[in-house]
View 1 (cartoon, rainbow, N blue to C red):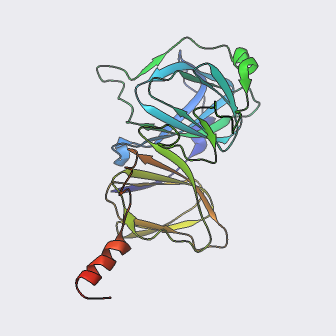
View 2 (spheres, rainbow, N blue to C red):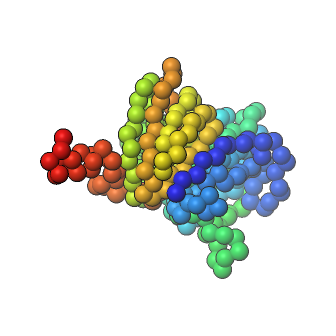
View 3 (spheres, one colour):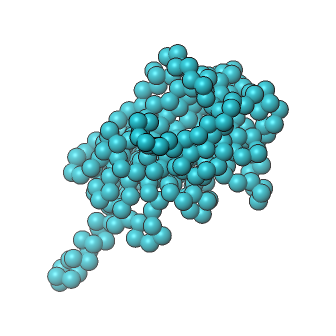
Length: 268
């Protein structure tokens, strides 16, 4: 199973629906059950200037990657001022909220796992506190002290994975050099690739395709795929995985097992 789509940011220019727990918030699911996903709940979001999302907790893990603008992010008692390229992990049950005190819209990509519960189900998965004063968030905010061993849940240019403290998902930046090929492989988890820069080619379940900035590719469990770059500039992308890959045998390479088969049968 795989699904290919493209991010359309036009939703972020529409007036946001008024709700008690947010102001100026725009959010759209780009990968979820309607696209064949079982574990991947991928969104793009935007927050208008002076917008906010009230502090809340939820029963799923979430990771957020900032694409544009400046985003104030509360994680428990700390408020971080995040800029493009920064990532933040919201573990299950950890209180967090968002704000935008800048003059431009802030935009991001976020992954939830497990998938958010449908609002019509018998019990909720998200629990909101009263809104936080945005000016108070500004006063409390500071840029993350990267390299400080007391910093938790915020990173830049490092994977959000088991080593970082995530339990249910991963999010990382991936770059392909010119003329680079991943080789055909599959794995026991869902993987989503969001192309940020450059052009990349793919072969997934026997189907070939080409992808550019804003394209999103979901590869399901057991789906054989390869990606390669064949242009004059490197490719930069964001990769998510859910559930979190196992410590061993996370990737099954077609070439490795084809080589084994040839050797077993006396071939070369």
